[in-house]
Length: 110
Ligand SMILES: [Zn+2]
Ligand SMILES: [Zn+2]
Image 1 (cartoon, rainbow, N blue to C red):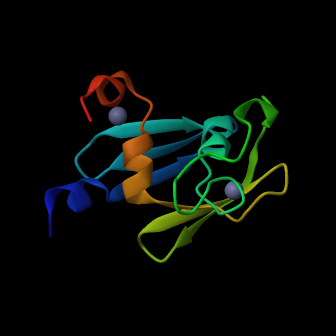
Image 2: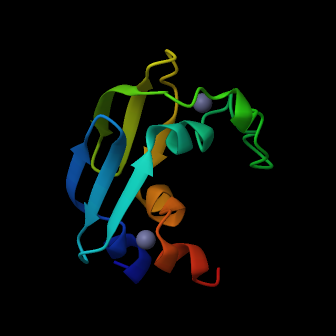
């Protein structure tokens, strides 16, 4: 198993009223606001499948957007039911690890 994949395994998933938190196998923690998850939605409606170009206007996502339900997809991804009714995005843990909004990850060279 390569290193990136093993880093992208969650040890713990927590959903609060305001955010979705993942504690990774290596101890790293990522806290995502529901709004930022919705803005990064990888489904074909929100993002061009081939170019990866966002089709969703991030400003159109309500500031108080919530998540009604978070569900595991196999053991590699998680799907959210957002309060705006959108539920087609499947977020792989690998992608979520890449989206980690903490300063350490944000400042790390890609
Ligand atoms: Zn979407
Ligand atoms: Zn991070």
